[in-house]
Image 1: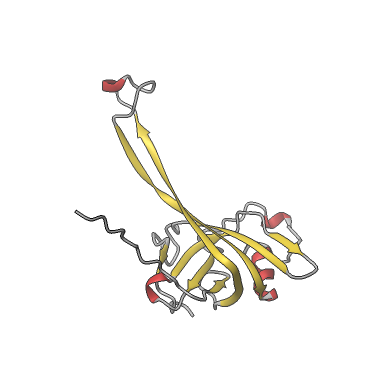
Image 2: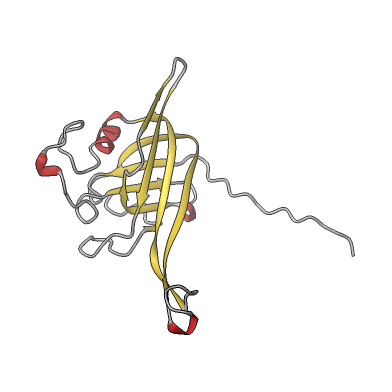
Amino acid sequence: MAYSPVCLPQKKTGLIDIKIAVPFSGSLTQLGRATDQIRQSRRTFYHDVPGDANGGHQGPPIETQFLGEIWSVSMSLSTWNPTAINLLQTMACMATQGVVTQAEIGALVMTAKSIRLLLDTSDSGDVRNYWCALVREPIQIEVGTKYSEWVVGFECHRPPCGHAKAGIIYDADAAAYS
């Protein structure tokens, strides 16, 4: 039997429109253009259930429970909308960029003040619409003599009860609330 290498197709999405809405139900605003790749990673959470049959807490679990997941999305922007960057820098919970009032400390952000992150591609099957995104990574500003970049990272959660999109971490609905 002859060996025949199999070439798997590479998915090319083309230009990705990166948009945000602050709060999530607001109007979408163009955030910018990524320099190359937008990195998306999924982290799942589990809880091990101990049992006497396996030695209790010291032994291996008798079962494992799935507790949910968080998606991390990071990108380097070569062009950006200053208005949208200002919205990100307030993290949807501060009235003024660079000013944190005492009343803003302890604000709950996932239900009412989360950010909608939309990665809109030319292929409707690749659209990622994250409904409860938070800026939890440091925002990096790289200023150079030839060009500048903004490096932005989001942590995308399953919206909690009370959120209009409760339970949906992402979907392909690019038109909702736009």
